[in-house]
Image 1 (cartoon, rainbow, N blue to C red):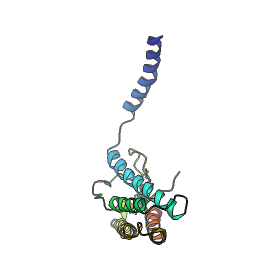
Image 2 (cartoon, protein in one colour):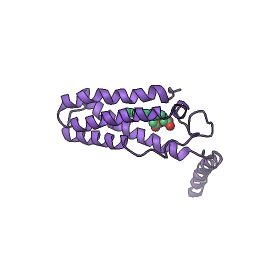
Image 3 (cartoon, rainbow, N blue to C red):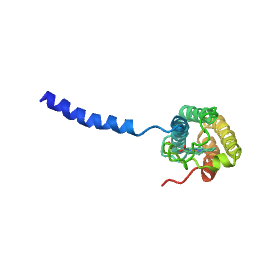
Image 4 (cartoon, rainbow, N blue to C red):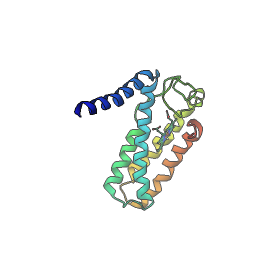
Length: 158
Ligand code: HEC
């Protein structure tokens, strides 16, 4: 019985391994994954802060300050290797990405959008721990800067 289970396990497992071996990674997949992980951090922080601002999560000054400081730190990460030429969504070799070619074609317009975010997250980091109203007053600009960049440089979800 043990042998049988092992065999079934191997059949399932081996098919998986063959599948991975066949699907070769594209040349920019690591950079794509790195930048998407950065955005996941943005999103995680904003989820908690937004939840507090909307009253869905109880306001906690320490957590709000920590989340805003994390977001500000993430917004200030060095990104010079995150966006190699050819890592846009028109290149079929790439892992799934929603980065539009416009990001490279209109460079450095995207840098301005990144700077807008940094300005907004610095204000948020200074205010988030000073009460719910202070948090709320700084959330709008952050949200606007996320959207401002996505509207221009991120493809809509399919
Ligand atoms: C300077 C431009 C810019 C700013 C500012 C920006 N984004 Fe993005 N965002 C992008 C681009 C481009 C992508 C697509 C990246 C890809 O798929 O390779 C993206 C993707 C994402 C994703 C999907 C990540 C994944 O796993 O595929 C999330 C979530 C996200 N952004 C959240 C945010 C939030 C929240 C903010 C604001 C706090 C923000 N972004 C600010 C440009 C920006």
